[in-house]
Image 1: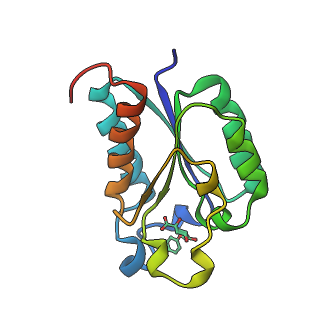
Image 2: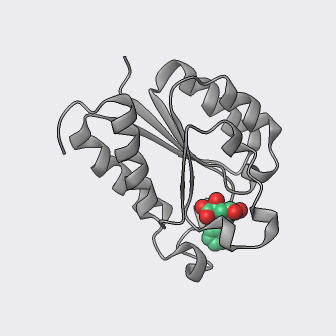
Length: 150
Ligand code: CA2
């Protein structure tokens, strides 16, 4: 079985650390990528970490994950609330999939309350800031089966 976790990030997350630190913190996406690699390694997993501003590219990544990943952690950003294409693609991915949001979307404006992705997510990680990515990897390792102790 593959030991690669896809970590997918949607639109505008390339700006993390540059704008709105009160909501999203000051950690950059490059920092988060490093945190993911560091957390996954001792658990025996590789990370394929991606960000795109394009809906279709996220869909393509999910299709690729069907062949190459044992799990998906996805922060779909704004597509969380709008994308049936993403919902349909995630339905085709059978292994565990964790929906992740840096901020607590439920404490924010109502437009951020109705996630389409939550309908098919195995689990949801919300409001833990950048640390949520590490926690999601630990949770994913638990679901898939970690090779070694951390
Ligand atoms: O909290 C999250 O991780 C979100 O998925 C981020 C999305 C937002 O639409 C979701 O409701 C919650 C927005 C990402 C925007 O990224 C920015 C990063 C830095 C500065 C401004 C926007």
